[in-house]
Length: 307
Image (cartoon, rainbow, N blue to C red; front, top):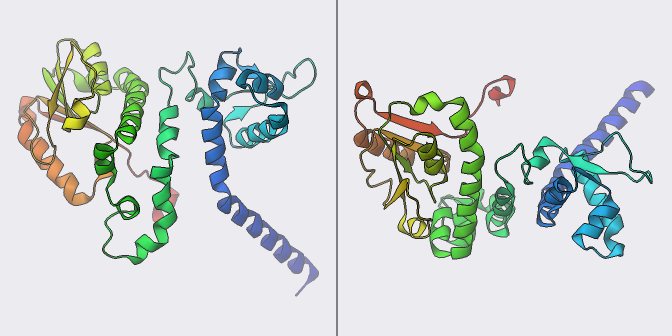
């Protein structure tokens, strides 16, 4: 083996080790982001003019001076991860200062963003949600387990929400924050989809964040939310949106249009077919203006699609 080839192989092995460390410690970035959010760092920076030094942050948060070096490390990790940025203009004492990227603005009360999406982090990085992933290997080996979540907790995600009031509130907070953020974009970019609709049902619409936004944009439209009783009972009252307790797998009330946001990705193919069949029965024929409006994540296209 030539010296050149040997050197290349050594570098390749060392890089492979680095890649392995990145994968093994990838969770650190997630928990660091949760930590920053729970300390309200994005909000604090936003309300301080958009830039702060670690010393200023530590003082505002109320941290003990011994935590300042660790706060610097936290901010460095999240800056490398693309959450915060270092402005080109240094502070008067040459201490590094940190500002907000567009991503960080989603976690703060920024003027450019209508909703704070920090509840998403609270849910996705909650131990109840994260714990099942640590049992993924045993789930693969258990042919009778339907989902990792149920294997870990004995209940599926929605059964857990029905029995645990705190978890249910966390989910509802996520849905409200998502609706406040996303519906502003949907109604700005795709308002034409909602034209000529007299009645609309938001299927599994939670506390009605999406329906309220639609009703505000189209006051002539009768908007209704369909969801489970324990969700509807906690929903805030509204003059423009009504609520119906029910189960989309059993029956969907009739309307000109049905709106389903973040519904189908939660279910397998057979369950999705059941929902769509009930949708078809609830709306008029296409030529009469019946619509099913779906907002959901889909697999994209590109070179990686061969995987």
